[in-house]
Image 1 (cartoon, helix red, strand yellow):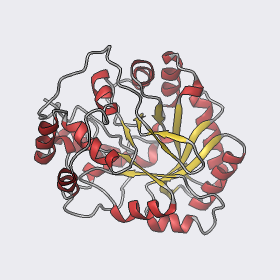
Image 2 (cartoon, helix red, strand yellow):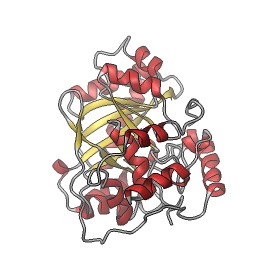
Image 3 (spheres, helix red, strand yellow):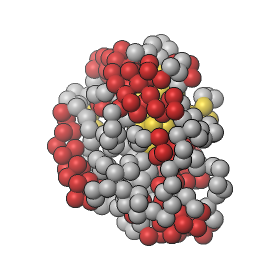
Image 4 (tube, helix red, strand yellow):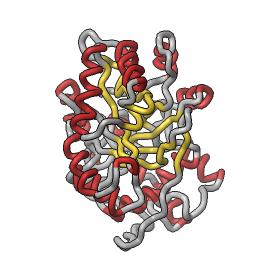
Length: 334
C-alpha cells in the first residue's frame, strides 16, 4: 500500500527560527493524518538496477533547460538528505536539486553531490534565499553558495513575499539581479508569488523572473496566477505536488488532502496500472508544469521520474482531477 510515509512533495516549514511555529503545526497535522504509506492500486517497486530514462526538460526564458522533475531537499525529506541527494544523482537519471538557505542543510546537499561522483556541470541546482534587506540578501546569496560548495547555481529564487525586519522584495530582487550579473546564478525567479506580487515586483525590477515556484496539486492550485505566469513567459513550478506526506505541507495546512489517498486518483491509477503518486504528478506535468518532489528511496525516485513512458491521462481524467479542488487556495502561511 502507498502511504503518507511516501512523500512526493516538499514543505517550506522546516526553516530558520522565523517559521518554527508554523513547522510544528504542519508536523502535527502530518502525524494525525497518517502513519504509513496509504492505499494505491499498483505499488510494485522497480528493481534497483532499472534506470528510468532521463526526464525531459522545460526551457526557461533565455534558453536554460530546467529538469521537469527535481529533488526537493526541504522538510519533506524523511531520510538523510545527503544520502537522498547521492542516490538521486548516482542511482537514477535525476539531475536537478531544489535547495534553500532556510532549509539549513546546504552542507548535507553538498556532501551528497560530492558522494554521487557526478560533475557539477551535470547537476542543475535551484535554490532560494529569504526576502530581506539588500545587504542581508547579498550575504545570504554568498553564504548559500559557500555551504553548497559551488561557485555558481543555475537558479535562485526569492523564497517568500514576506520579508525580515527592514527588508523588501525590491531590495532582495536588486541583490539577485546583481548576483546574476556577477555570474553567481544563471537565472533568477520567485516563489509563493501571486499575480499582484509579480506586478508589484516589476515596477522596480529590470529583469523579469524566469520561474515562480508555488504549491500546485490536484487539491491546491491557484489557476489565476498560473494563467498570468503563462502570459508573462514565467514558468510555473510545483512544490507539494502530492500535498503532504511524512512532514505534511502547507497545502495540508490549508485543508488539502494527501493526493495519494483520494478515490479518484486511486481509481485512475488502476486504469493505467501505475501508482497513485504517479497519477498526481502526471496531472501536474501534463499541463506543462515542472515539479519538485521530496523522496528518499530508490523505488519512489524511479516512480517520480517515470511519468512519460506510459502515455497521457485522458481529457476526462484530467478534468476529474482538476475538479477535486473544491475551494480556492488560501494564502500561504509560512
